[in-house]
Image (cartoon, rainbow, N blue to C red; front, side, top):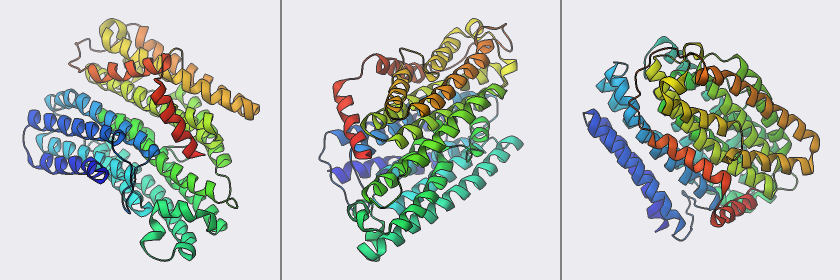
Length: 479
């Protein structure tokens, strides 16, 4: 039963991708894309009511359940947003019917690749799946075929390839560390076997492997100074892909990193990954916060915001322990929901105004009040103001850090405050300044944006006990 449900999570997007590559017509393919994403999300919910077992290739535990449900949910809401967004792109001629088939097929292929990475019980298969997700998004970033889009796609491809090569080398080193203990062959790649015997592995090889894995998957997470691909990819690709990149793909790479961190925790002679993750997390927070003040493109600005928040999440997991891991997990979910909601708003705003330049957008609360106030609510959430969910997760990260390393709290809080100032300063004129640009009403679907923001608001006020218990169980797994 478990394998059937896990198999369905892979089969639904794989079959849908094939159909979407063949079928003509916008309305049909857009509806099929939404139905496929909804079916995958509903199937993922079944994982909570069936018995948990793992095979040689597929794995299901409390950790990846959270990632799978989050991925399929945001994948579904983004497909709904995408339907109205892409319709406008076709009307103005930015996308042709041929590229439309390609777009929808690649969207489902991306969902397949991310789901496969999350449920793979084989570290080689997980690497392949993340590489597949990267290549898929590279193609989608360049789909507009403009000079800027193609340059961003090539930059993403080159830097992403360097990162994935480093991750591959780290994966091979883990296999070499495992081979004397578990023998040659498939067992040396199966994650459950590796964790079971990790205490006996050569700690020196594990140490070197984790450094390469941190650099490799850290590139995919968008940690500074490995982040150079991220702002361009977010700014030049279609906005639904920006939402998926920020809300999901960064998490998938982080998930891979957490799996290897759990493996090192079993080996008492290996290095403690925490300090490395804490350092890279803080560098990302401070760097991204400062860069927010210089952004002129609204999508690029929120891309740097994603770097900041991934830094906070990596910092929390680096600190480790039940409370910090709980906070990191909650922050990851809140960031995914909030940032994708912000990109939903920004996508429609860019379509209405015909530009992504902050200087050319003004007075949104007057010209497009629903979009404007929706974006404003998203910004209030993302900067961590109460009572929204990110306030709660940031409060937990800060309080757990203060109890253990007060001087780190100063750096972290400083970064958060700098980022708050940068976003509020840049977004103020966009929201409340003199109206600028076109004032046509937006033909937008507001349901995905306000659904995400509603969930973030609810999480800031009340977390159901069953959810808290589930997060606590995952936090214990992470060590």
